[in-house]
Image (cartoon, rainbow, N blue to C red; front, side, top):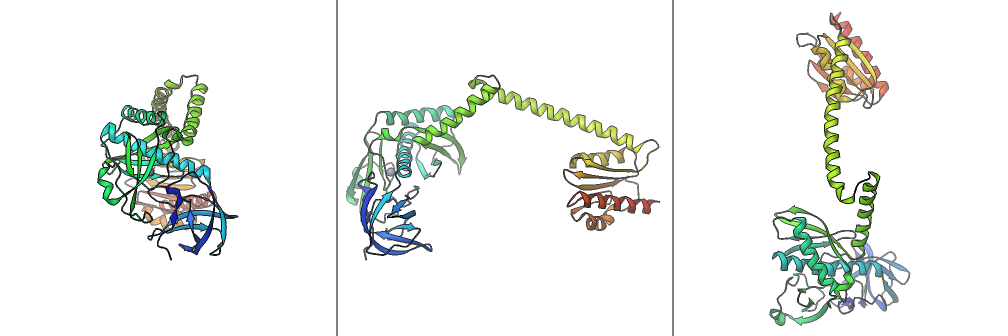
Length: 403
Ligand SMILES: [Zn+2]
């Protein structure tokens, strides 16, 4: 049995249809998988996802490589060893990854050249890519400069050259990215990927022939992680798609408010400040109304307050109860059917009644959760009927105990 699978994509990442034989049938993490005599399928590695495609009519669901460097094609239906198969790599997905991956070489080299900042790790996802860069922080201006330099390398349509060297020859190259520790499948040789006068890396991934095919490189956002900066970026058609929805969202938002696109952020800031201000005013007003309501319900001379509302917010219910007590009510029971069915009770500080002692009986009727102190209790009910039953019971209990 061979130690490694023959990986044809190393020297040709553009062939997608090929004829081969099923070498071994097996399993990958409990799912049926086959090893092929030779394969153009790229297995997940180096931060890049594995290919998809078909073997005859069987779907290739994922491609992985094991510690011996053997490539396993995960299939929906097991295939017999020795069987000849026509294989096809799903090209649009592969080409998309080639764009993202080659773009990552170009972008990482731009960070290295323009900011003297190394790429510590990279991840190419099905939607977004990220690279962690040894930088303390970033600004949009700085990022724009680096992005422009990277895209200029695309516009110059430089070749992306791949060649194999022996371990001993490695010292001749000034590598941005050293060879990976896991070199299963490389058979002792090292694959060097070079973009002339820009980037030289040891890499086993799939690349476009020329930088122009990457199309575009766009940084979308960044965040600080572990003292470094992680940048999210997209290349190729993903950059266009991303631009498309952002442009639509921004232009539409501006149009609906008769603004210019460029004024949108300032407008949003103003609108949010105004909203916060209004929210505060509304809160003050609401509280003043609750104080007035509490005074009216409490009356003069003060009497106990019983109130079950169809709809009152949790905060308002609590404020009403407290304000009634402050207005002199000896006790208050306030309930609401919605939005959260609940019951609150409070009593004057000098009153002798222990409300907390009533919680078990209240919970039994409310079938909910709650608790509190001898002076104030809150219970949430499962529904409006239980809230009402709990309210009625509590009013009756307090009335009988204070009579
Ligand atoms: Zn690469």
